[in-house]
Image 1: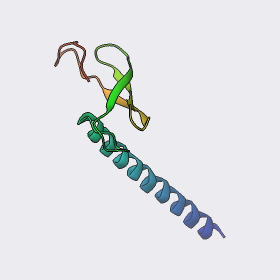
Image 2: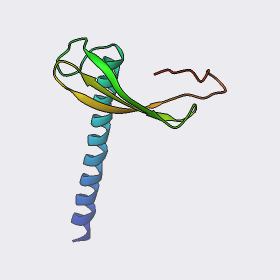
Image 3: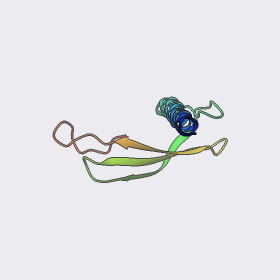
Length: 92
């Protein structure tokens, strides 16, 4: 009885880890397309930043992108860097 419970939990945990890795890989590909100015959904160069919030110079920025054509919208948390290594200018 205990063996089946442990096996079930192991399968569930492995499934969750694989799903998370796949999700992060997809998110990375979408961000790469967006940084090149291409919408990941309609593949047109109509993506723009509609909202940008951050925790200061060295904090993580929460950036919202939206496509003007298909209304695709996604939010990304982007590392803002550090004041010691970069200037505190407005950067993506």
